[in-house]
Image (cartoon, rainbow, N blue to C red):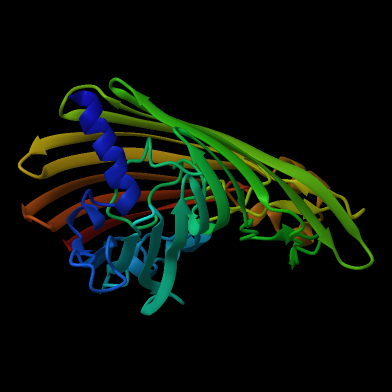
Length: 396
């Protein structure tokens, strides 16, 4: 019983990332013509998605971004904390989602899915667009260096620091056999490289990132572990260098009883970026810095999270957790001049959440959440912020 419930919880988290109601679980299904009168015979097409309202109240400073998620880059530190305005409300429906999944008679799976978070909110963006046949998947999907094992359910779309892997989607070619999967992926290069002047230098993409993941369950325990290797390089025409980045994570979800589950993740990355999720200013620390001699030096860090979920029955649950990510800036602080402004970089991002979620009717889920955010800078400055969230999701 525990194992079945645990596997279902992981699948639900992977499908929705938040709440606990997968759009595909309640999708509208269209079957191909069983009377052999057209070319759709044998096809199954699921249309799924949800309409969602997110509302937030930032108690002591406005740190909201689109979907009303909290943004670590907006947390004031040092003397700026002394001049904070208070009490900010906002709401939007940008997280609303629409997807189509088709299965052909030959066993080919095709998924196209989007939401409205593009360009800061209100513009349709592609989340998933891929095909899969006999374990080979090609297209845009979650990075293989990611897992929803160990994930603490949050109302906030962006989740907590310390989640397993990138928590983003990218173009890739992946092969899966049972619990094991490998992939070649487009690297994110989200935050770039730091130069001695403090500005970012354009990063070169020479090779795909290589990832491998093992994810399975045994009794009351679900586990996932993954690793990646990538090349990080730059070439200005007059200067160039390269280095090998890598990372690994381990994640567990344990069903202690039929109603209590514990979650835990630890992640270490050399070559930063979004693989060290919610690091740096909010989503990703820079991959590396270029010292005064033109050498490329990688930036390392680690993250971890712990949490618990309590099933209260009747579609009600309580979820709580804490997560943090810590970036090692020591080498950059030593090697780069003051103009690089390393002292003002965010070294540690931490958040803690507790939420209550309930389902008043089938395909309807609502929730309220308290979140606490804290930032520690390299120079010793720190700051924090608290916020409340409400969400209502109507799935089909």
